[in-house]
View 1 (cartoon, rainbow, N blue to C red):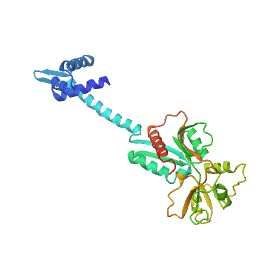
View 2: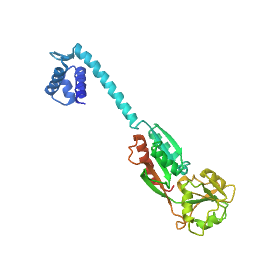
View 3: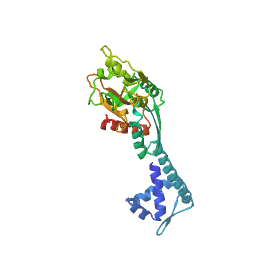
View 4: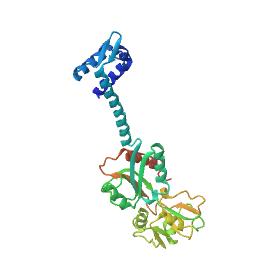
Length: 300
């Protein structure tokens, strides 16, 4: 960079037509600037300025050098622009595997918020169960994973963790809808719909009923939380989800009720990356945003 600084000094002297005037603009002494130019001319192997009674001007060699300086400055500006793109300040790509629960509200909101500030950044979003999400991290298929109750955690480096309680989703006309909080035994005594085994909510339900007089006897099992929510509108049935994955239910005919924490433990929603990996800048910045959002509003 010292060589570049000298070239820029030469450019400024040529523009000013005077070593003294250029030195004043640079806030250095004219003798120091003159020595810098003379040292460059010695290294360059030819003089580049004609010394005139009232200033300096480029000679033919200096004119050729000036063309090189202008090309260098242009190339440097282009490289800086490319580096800005590479760093994710303007461009970049973020790939993320996420649990289905993050699909309806949280993740679309956060992606839109990020792209409002970085419109050149693109996204790949893959809806995966918890085991699939961890696998995609380990194979570098995605940069980030946002999953509920991960399975293995061998290669999973946690960036942010937040608790999510299991809630009941039911029709506002259901007999239990009037209660502010529900007990799990009462929910399971009613007709219920549960997620398929690969999902974290199902894992927590199985843990909560293991070794107790409670049992899961679903009338419907599904791998779509949207389907389970909608089904509660057609039958007096109780579904189970975590709050972050439940859209606003006001006016939908549905209600959401917490289940007593003594009955079922909250699960962990984890944002993570492949252990030991240095993320691309765009992905790292998005991870920071997601972490802040989970800290600020862990249970929407």
